[in-house]
Structure formats: structure tokens, C-alpha cells
Length: 57
Image 1 (cartoon, helix red, strand yellow):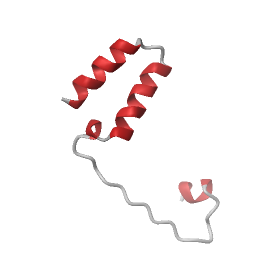
Image 2: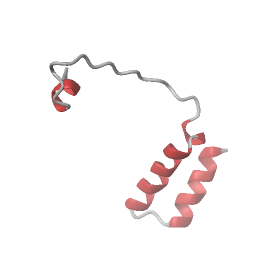
Image 3: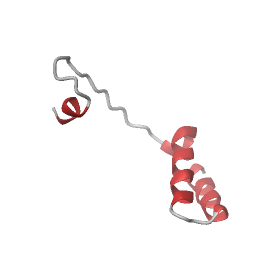
Image 4: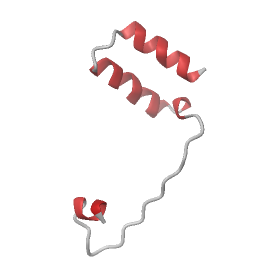
């Protein structure tokens, strides 16, 4: 209900499908979001890349 209120679609039916990803860091979009978040938090580039490589292995 809260999501329907946020999206202003109270007159329409809203279906949400949630799927679990086995190893999320193998998906490029999720990995890019992780690296971007690390850089936004002022983590050094080398540390962020090293952690990303560790997570994908």
C-alpha cells in the first residue's frame, strides 16, 4: 500500500515481483553500483577496485 501511495497509482493494481540473485556481484549493474557507492563514500579507487575483485571471485 505504501508503494502504491508513493507512486500515486491507488486506482490501479500494482504487482511487484521480487527475485533473489544467487551471487549478486556477478551482475555488472550491481557491481557498478557497489563501486560507485564506495567512491561516493570517499574510499580510494584502488581499495574499491580490490574489494570489487574480491567480491566477484
